[in-house]
Image (cartoon, rainbow over all chains, first blue to last red; front, side):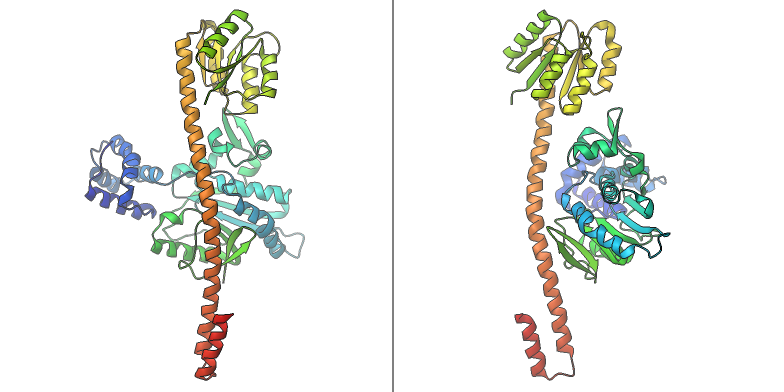
Length: 278
Length: 187
């Protein structure tokens, strides 16, 4: 494994912050070495300074993508932490449908949900399973589900909707597994009816959100924890702009918006919290 | 932790050999005369590893037993035993989720080596599970604390906003403003 020098540590952590917003301090030296060493070697670089320069010069951004994939954490599960999904099913969706159902039976009820750091898709697919379970026949609704992530390979895996036994077994009840997935070639694949409900695209949360539109519900869980306080403030301010005035924001169960975005007020339902605009 | 192993083979000599060698090596062993009996055992007990002959009389051969075992518990590891002539079938079994295959006659050193690998893998998986469980406990306890703080902070913010409003009211005298602000604080 190639060792990182203190100067390189500064250069690389600043570079990583610039390309994806993830803030790493000097204590993450070992993490950087374990995750970036192979990328350096693969690209014929003997040290991290070389890797940095090569990545900056690379017009196709191949190395940049490799670094983002290596640094961004993809650890996620179906129905990770049941709280938000129970909140969605028992509180938010019924309220939202009440508020959004048009007077005319000819018009469809719009439901727009965004999973801002969708990783390999488990969260947004869990949301679509909740929708399917709650609504049954979805033809009366105009459902738009969007999953975005900084990592291109995560977006690709999310789009294929294929998971191995380790990725799937925890969190997902057996009945839901057999109802919404099919076993093919040793992998569990999400069924087309669920897959078709969701769109995925690559998005850097640090950059302006262009062409995203407005959402009724935004999930932004366990991603801002990797950002600096300043970047968090900017992020949640931009999220507030994408949310409908009566929309809902769900953040990670150990996250807080106190001192981060005064535009949101926390509301408690049973054992979970959600946020709405003031 | 001792691994429990189910052996399915219709040859009584091989069955006895497996039973003895595996027991001597410290494993908990159950033997079945064919796939049907093995499937019956799977109904009643859990096994960490299944070692099965690919070709057995009756409706349940090695491949079928593999599928039944994986349906019961995806984490059960299956090693298939095959004659040299049927390597293709063994590869097909691997594609269906078998963790390994061994050729006849079985080399026990090789088998023990594979079992050690499986034991190591299982211990890593268990370790990861333990860590995740510990993380879940820490996380849910932290989440409750953070929720309480979040709601409390929002409540204080609301009070501060009201006090701010009161203190800016030019229609009130200084005393009235202080009095009303104190009322909000003491609510």
